[in-house]
Length: 468
Image 1 (cartoon, rainbow, N blue to C red):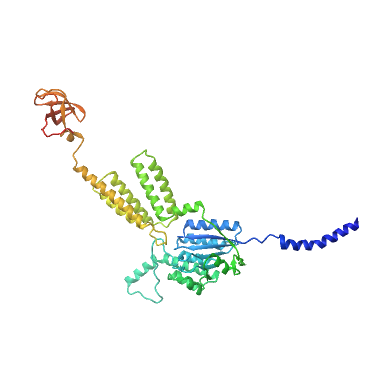
Image 2: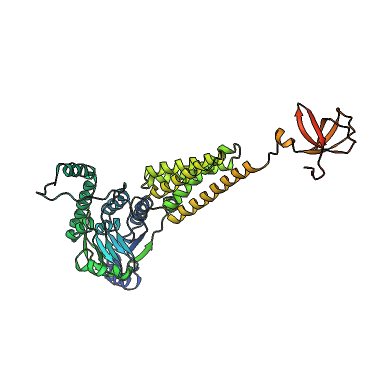
């Protein structure tokens, strides 16, 4: 028995290497391809874009992505949203490859900062970047500081310079903060920090080939496949560790924005937010003028709340918002209590000026469409003209109620009347007691000349008088 056990053991040891080799040659499953996530930021950088990147990048890491390709085409956007995206990029456990594409795309303003923050920065042919000067939400233009040793021409000019420097201190703080921020990103990724400062301070721009020559980006890639091929094997720093990119043959998976992100992108469009705000105000105004209608009040309340939510996410000029509210109030007052158009004209001017100012902050991509403002203003002007025309028409029209209207009415006697006697008459479908100075037969046409309480005094109607 021991002999057979020993023979079996020897045969097993001899066959094991053979079986292992055969399994490696014929039966071993192929290694799985690495997966790269692609996230597309098209359009202005705002709250919706920042939320989309955060959500998509977290889902990509959970799904096992070895890298993230951030495809970028933006005119710029809000600084807070830009910083939120960059913070997510720096905290990402996988490398982020920022790619300005397709051809004709741009990474302007906030997009330049995001491009500098990526472990790999690449651009498609016929793209450009730069013009990263921060713009104050109040619309102030940064003023250069006086040169060292420069003396003011007079005491008056010195006072003006001092006031200007005080008013512009905040702009210089924003400028210096932006320069330090983009320089820190350039130093972190080993890119051209000098040109980055020029892009912020002087709004410098570069084409794709120029950016590659000046070491602003790593290379120019024709498409995503070319991007992955050129990035493969490069060493990048992710957090506190160095990582060699293994992207050869990687599959690319698109991460589209979710329903909430798409909803935010719609309502934070400045033109949509503007229309929601107007719809809410006019809906509540109609409900106040016609209590119990319900639909205008409900729809107006929903539109107003959604519009206000969108406005608190957008760079709103509150002086413009106040002028808009004043203009709408004056237009409603004109409609409720028609005058000679003074309220309406003032409301129209206030509304148009406020609409133009509402989001005229200089932030790229965050302005209300002027065509929409012009269309609404023309409709409001037409409505105002109609109201004024109706007011003047009503003042020229004959009175149709009261004593003044009754004095021109004619009717028919229902029974004969004696001189200085009384009888019944039909006028405007009503039976009235009448008195006449002369005798008249039944069916005679008479005209009202005065009224005393419920008694009408009549006289024979002219031959050309018509029954109302």
